Image (cartoon, rainbow, N blue to C red; front, side, top):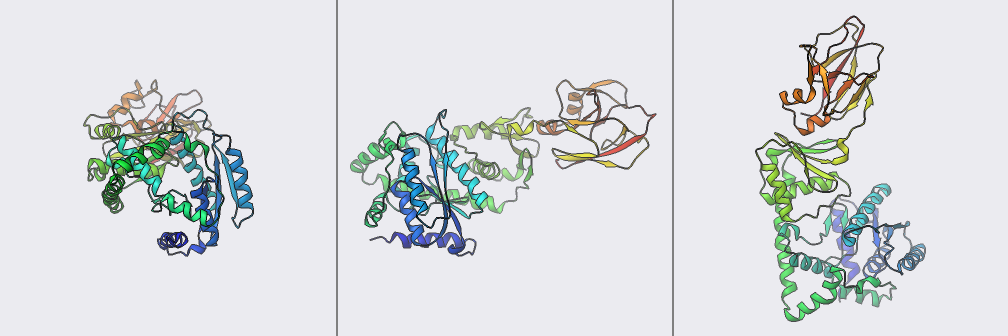
Length: 445
């Protein structure tokens, strides 16, 4: 008979060994559903006398949701759980209920982990969940890189029961006389996973007893290939830079990888930088992105990867950004200010300084100056030629890419007249005044 507590204890020890910390010093968050799987994991953690919080997500999807919530509140109140949380999820407008609910749960779990300063998030996924997931990917003809199944270790998430069958978990729970609540939606076969669990897989196991073994064998092969790419990622210095609008990495470093490798690299950085982002794209969708990146044509726009994230390739870098974080608010210059990709600061100067140094500008004292983004209609009177010129033409002459145009500061007066385009050009000013000198320092090449 399998000793479930011993297996769990050894798993948790192996997780702690990664940081040379004792499991008695760890703090965990356990996602509780009220079902037999999470109740078994809950009881094991109690018996091992570990420090953990619990959280229940109420999807408000079935009549028993509130009853389960009350059941778990009473259960955890009478245990040595540090604290129990309940979070209500609004999924009324969700197009893909299963996917959206999963994304929201993990978003809240990670936020809670950070707020409580916990080490790991534990979920009660088991071997049968893994088999269902692998079968689902197979019938969807998913590319192998999208068929990795459920990962036992992913960022701060651990799934210590992933190699344990549902049958073993039920045997343990029955023997321990545990109480649990069955989710009534588990019998609703309109959900793809339920149909697979209740109909497809039972029939396949009878018709082809070797089918499940084949799924798990291929899973291990795919994991090995993925781990090989992951090890290469860890050994590669991508010269990453983080900005308040996103992250960049060197394109020549990305070019060291195969097409599949490039996809994994981009997934890795997006998931690690952008909290709560899930990328469930087909291989064909990823190929479209790779075609965009490998094109020799100068890119005049972003590649929209998801509802939130876009990718852009400049001459030497790959940028991954949130769409709404490239729209900047106009700010007051005064004694200097931080700007996206750099800063403008004050330098002592009360005399006019020549226009030749574009990183510095002399602006008349006694006026109010603002810094804003470029507008397509912007123009200025050139200090050197005296002619009015479009800012867009200036950008073209200086070969600015899409990102550089978006983050380029434009210094204006109260009448929205452009006086200085830091690093690029000056507009003419009245030289019969006292001046203040400003300097632009860019952090983004």
